Image 1: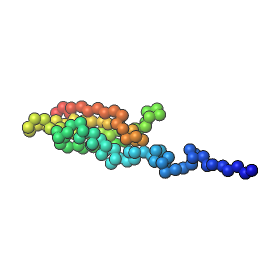
Image 2: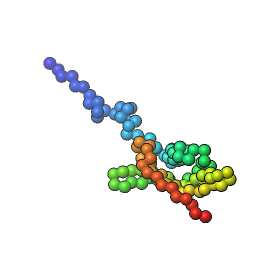
Image 3: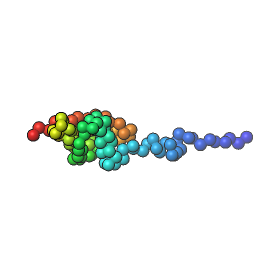
Image 4: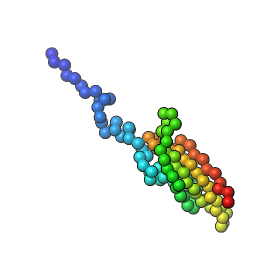
Length: 107
């Protein structure tokens, strides 16, 4: 009797497996758009202007992430605005924000 061998599904290259291995945030514009959406959620209609200074890929141990830095203008009161510097860390595989910080820019 001849044995029929079933191909190993786990080792086979499938579109679903390839999609899970691909990065959700693959480039700089995607990372910037993710940060801008997070800022809109955080500040709402008080958000005036978002400018990005730099975005780079870095790693710490086994953790890989994208760092995005820039400045944001936030509306205060009727006529005033406040400029804040920010830095976000994004997991490129899941697209989740790992951490962030923002500081008021003193003039």
